[in-house]
Image 1 (cartoon, rainbow, N blue to C red):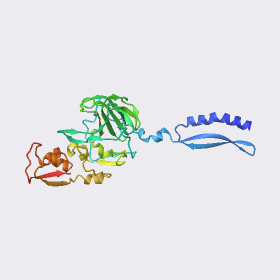
Image 2 (cartoon, helix red, strand yellow; image 1 turned 60 degrees about the vertical axis):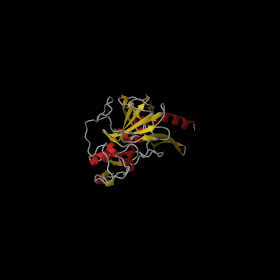
Image 3 (spheres, one colour; image 1 turned 45 degrees about the horizontal axis):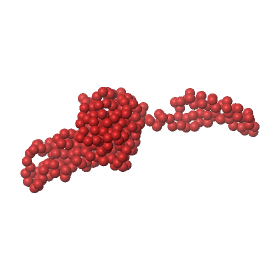
Length: 310
């Protein structure tokens, strides 16, 4: 028994050395002594392991290869993309950017005559803000309008922006895990109250966050395979007061078929205004005006027919 103990003590360092030299392998080889009819034998066994590399396969993608600028909010400003955009996710869920119930106070769309390119989530100054997915911090500094801002580029090309922060806790080029602390919510920049302005974009194209993510308590990514049409990258097609009818495209064929715009003829009734019509039909005033070639100040007539693109 004493001999067996010394043999085991001698062989353990050897097994560790082998494991270190084989660090790229997905197994650890261990030499274990066994006794068969009072004869000491050495047996090699392999134990499968899951390396950090296995658990973070996405990180093999070099997301810093193109348009990596840590000083500019949107480095893709002059790029042109072909639609529909194809976006994939390896996860089925995301980490909520705030650690309390998500209350959306303003949606992606047309708002007070200007495009609102993200969603506003209610919070109190000082509340923690975390990253929705794994990625690398591309931008972490003050941005005009957005105030103190963090932009995280994720391994599928999506970027998420966390704006109006009161404190930034990360720096550019930091590798970030899903759910990792980025900073504290606040009211910096052009803001009328404490909230998180959350933006999702892909190579410079702003995408309606609610097309990609379900912002209820499930924290669910809508699909791991999503095709995005121009409608979901143009605030003028949406009203910030409510979510437009959402039709998710999971194949390129379905996305291309949707380009055949569905139109509805609306007949103006007594008491109608552009604002009331847009709310009732879940479209924006800008979209109504663009399609019908009228101005926001135009007077509506009872019986007038308007074309609504849904």
